[in-house]
Length: 385
Ligand code: GDP
Image 1 (cartoon, rainbow, N blue to C red):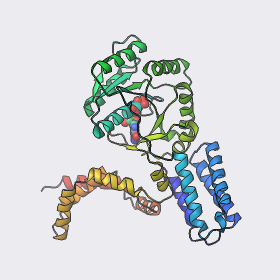
Image 2: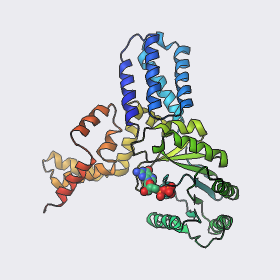
Image 3: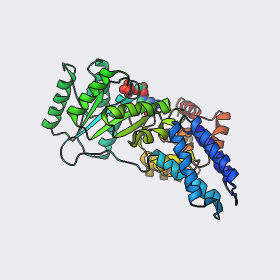
Image 4: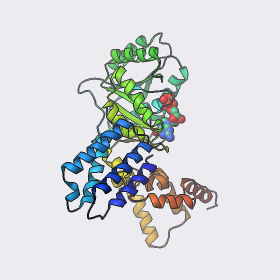
């Protein structure tokens, strides 16, 4: 995600860097390039318009062009505007101060909803002692219930079987009754994926929301669908007032339009992003870090966080010792490669380093990729000791 946008913004930023004087003409060219980059990234037109207008107002209002370092000031204003469009701050999930917190999930079929329910339950479980109950309100597809059940087993979180419910109302009331009786802290309800044009399904969602009175109504949106994701979000918002968004498939090669449009269009913040198919591939969303990534300034904070989550300090010290004594062997090398995969692979790590897009291209041209790393690990593990 964001690779093309990042390449374009890096080019725009480097054309400004070091310029002592920026004429109004330079500014016009820069803003035009930013507008084109955003439109090509499939950002919604009205978001692009206000983005450019705000930067222009700020530049002219603050007399940036006559300042000592106009280049740096403009880059800073672009960065600030990107952060603003992405949502300003990282916002946590809202929990009820007393009693049960109810979290309702909605989204189109195939957006990654059920996986995301399990991912978020796993994330909350890892970071708190809260007791969580998962419920699938998809009474149409037993397979959807089974999917959530399997995932809940995988993450060791309780799942309430509702296969025999006769109606959605009965199912929701039953879930609430069970959660209260067994003193759960959080009740998470997955709903059937629906098309926004399907009135019956949208009415059912309204009914669920009314019965549940959730603290959080989370829309799960596929970031690969570009600004369409933002338009879909708007429809869901009009029906049941979503309070947050989780964007899935940020690991894909979408252009970033959804991420940059969704907050402005719905007003609801993006709280998490899905970065892969695995249960632990969910990250809290930090607008500033993403803005820095887009501008080619890297995301060192996230990289360090990933490293501290995945790297065992004692192992690393051991390895450093081995290297300094010249004892580094193929097994150590293989361990290092596996470690790198846990942190998102070569491409994942590279995407967080500053000014790296050119190097990424060179690597791709030389066939250096995550597949190459996997092959190396396979070669080493097929050798005899
Ligand atoms: P639902 O129909 O909306 O409930 O979607 P599912 O949860 O069944 O997900 C559909 C597919 O998307 C599954 O194969 C998931 O593994 C995959 N998926 C979900 N989230 C992500 C993500 O963040 N990245 C990637 N690459 N795949 C995802």
